[in-house]
Length: 158
Image (tube, rainbow, N blue to C red; front, side, top):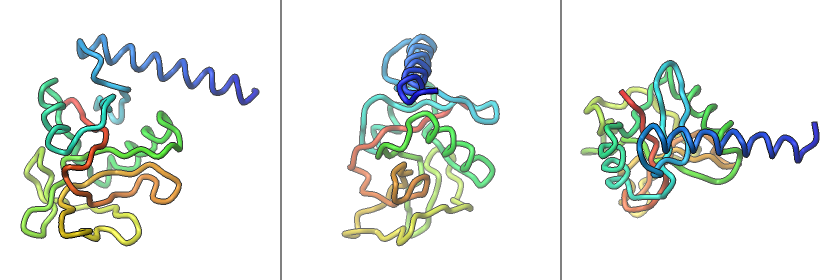
């Protein structure tokens, strides 16, 4: 199959996902949707701060994602397959409270970690939120980031 046919097929799949999400949630705030282990995940179309990501999910009766060892790899694989190898990042509900990482959406302590090389580094003493990078360097690994930075929200339906 030629390179152009593959791109065309992938584009059609993404457009189909966008259409499904817009019709299922009643708006166009979602870039794509995917399913892992019977859980529906949504990725926002716009980049927002961590607190706005939480609110964006909540507004649609969704939850900003909390990850565990069982679901992390499957979710990352699905994201990578859907968005490709472009440089993109996603907010999770992970937040640092008194030097401990907690899932803000559940209140549970983070038990499983998948930090990228050299992370968490608390750059400038302001990196208190947890995001996932998809790029050539740290693809699928976690990074601590300033909560005011803007990335896509990764939400799920409970």
